[in-house]
Amino acid sequence: MRVDSIDKLFIEELKDLYSAENQITKALPKMANAASSKDLKKAFESHLRETEGQIERLVQICNILGTSPKGKSCEGMKSVLDEGSSMLHESAEGDVRDAALISAAQRVEHYEMAAYGTVRTYAQLLGQSQVAKLLEETLEEEKAADQKLTSIAQKVNVRAQQPA
Ligand code: FE
Ligand code: ZN
Ligand code: FE
Image (cartoon, rainbow, N blue to C red; front, side):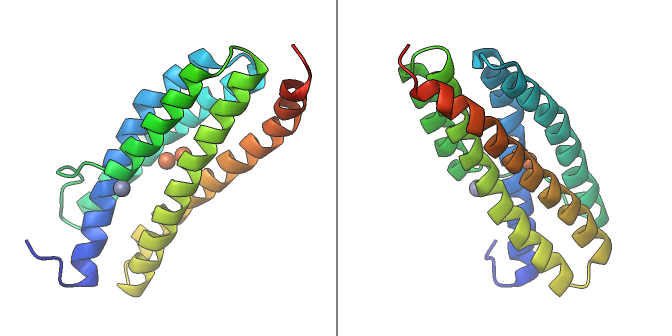
């Protein structure tokens, strides 16, 4: 199928996000396990539950639009997660590894913020106000998750800087 309209591009990007979110639900438990900081562990665990809700929203949105969320593989998220995983395995356990985890997780959140901002705007343009509202809810959760990581980083990075 040739993507020759915003409607079609919109669906393709929603499918891409569905794939991205599913990859994230597999990565977050590993990230929570690798984290030493209790706050960081908790942040990953609570974002996992949030991410499951975001997947449900994408299913709901695709129902509204009469399509399936399946059928695409997000290669961008796959690479972001692969790179994060390599950095994690290269870093020493403790504060430095936590700093690497935060760095990787913030890349994930920013990728999602870019994607959700775009599809939210497409939904508005296409007059899909209910869908736009659902996408906006997820976008706000991603922004809050990113800000939470910034605040945890303020402690973790300082500790990581001190000699072990
Ligand atoms: Fe997400
Ligand atoms: Zn993608
Ligand atoms: Fe997220």
